[in-house]
Image 1 (tube, rainbow, N blue to C red):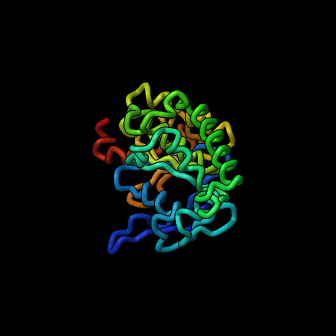
Image 2: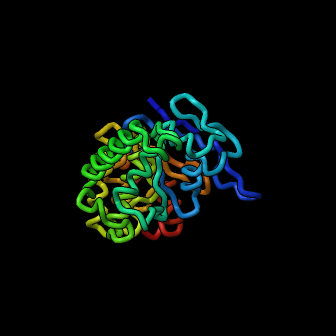
Image 3: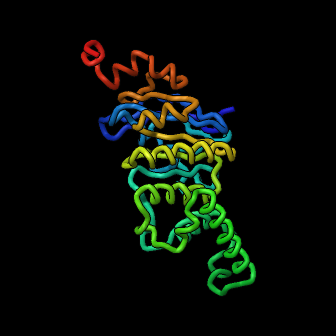
Length: 257
C-alpha cells in the first residue's frame, strides 16, 4: 500500500521545468531511493512534498489526503519528516536540546501553561526529555547528550539531524543525501541505521548519490533525468537499465566502457 503518492506533478521556476509530469508512489514500510544526475530534480521533489514550495501542476497526497499548498509545519504533523543536504542543526544548543526541539511539534502545552510552569507543562517537559533520550539511545548519541551540536564530528551531526527528524514522530522519513561528506566507515554505519529505522516500521524515502548505499539498502529505486522519471525497479534492474547508464555516463562513455 502506498501512503505517499505523486500524480502528474510538475514544478516550473520561470522558464525552467525542474520536474516534469512525475508519477511516484512510496509504499508503506519500505526503503525507496530517488536517484539521478545533478540537476535531475530530486531535491525539488522533496521540497514539494514537504511544503517548501507547491507543485505547479499535479497532486501530492499522503494517507489519501492532499498535501498541495499545506505549510511545512502541517505536513510534519501529518507524519512526514525530512533532513537536508546541508546540515541544519541548532549548533549552539546541546544534542539533547536539538532532539527536544523536534518533539515540540507534538506538544499540547500552550504558551500560557509553559510560561507559568503549570503541572501539565512540567509533566509534558519530562515526557519530552525521556522520549528524546530514548531516541538518542536508539541512534547511539546518548553519551553526547550534553555536548553542543557543533562539537560533534561530521557523521555525528548527520546522525543528530536524523534523530531530530525522528523526534517529530513521523511515519515517513525523507533523507536528502544523508551520506554526503561521509567516509566509508560512516556510510556503512548510516546504512545500518537506515535499516534499523525501517525495521521500526518507518517508511524511508531517500535522495542519494552514493550508489553503494543506494544499491545496498533500497528495495525500490526510481531514476530521474531532467525532471522526468526514466526508470523504476529493484537495484539489480536499475543497474542493468540502459537508459540509466546513459543518463549517468552518456552514450559515448557507455560505448567506450
